[in-house]
Image (cartoon, rainbow, N blue to C red):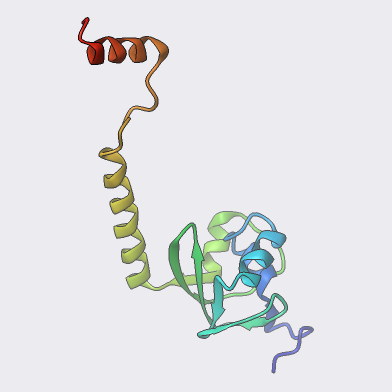
Length: 133
């Protein structure tokens, strides 16, 4: 078991916050409590210590992420530095991109692709429906 004072380990919620997956630590804690975050294939608590080489699987906005921890940092650093803390699984990146494309294509067939009709457009639609166009 890893010690919390060990420099080769850090709390999971703190690492997710430092790696910029969540804007606040409380959001990271909430996702962990809801079971949306797994470390090495098992559900964990907020205080779980993660170290280099651990595999983290999480779901954000219904999109999967599979990450290998490459570095540890107690501070929240700029995004380019935060990206150095982990490496993503390429298969998960491809799956996430496919899901984004499917979501985008499903919005094209939406009832109002350009948003809700304006008051003027709605009046014109009503006239067309009544046949007095």
